[in-house]
Amino acid sequence: MPDANMKKTLEQIQTVTIDLKVDKDVKLELAMDLENEQAAKDMVTLVNGGLEFVKIQAKVVLAQQPELEPLVDLVGSMKSTTKEKSVVISGSVEGAAIDKVFKK
Image 1 (spheres, rainbow, N blue to C red):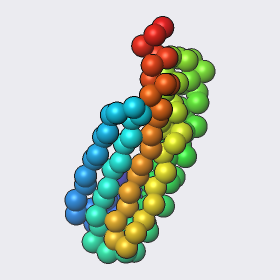
Image 2 (image 1 turned 135 degrees about the vertical axis):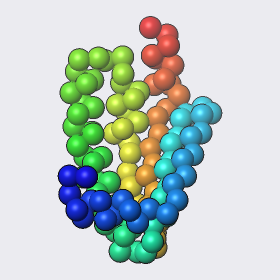
Image 3 (image 1 turned 180 degrees about the vertical axis):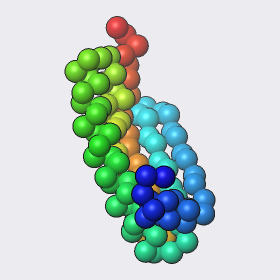
Image 4 (image 1 turned 45 degrees about the vertical axis):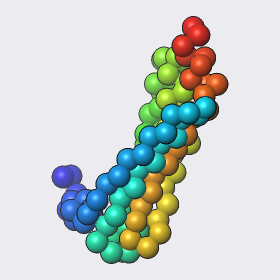
């Protein structure tokens, strides 16, 4: 790990659950339970920093590969929240955006 605090935060993850729903739209949710509320707050700070970096990089990729727009939309919709000792990262993309990719 590049940072001791990051390593400490990651070591406090107790469970991870991923929920992917594909219906009319696609919804992704990743939930993490951590050891305590402070660990959850630290994790959401870490996640938010990572999400901001990925959103910037996704825009660069989109400029080079416009067909990846639905993936970039999913990344752009990602947000993280904390409740007690849990962190939830969620995002979604509309089915119409995915249809555009397959109709090309």
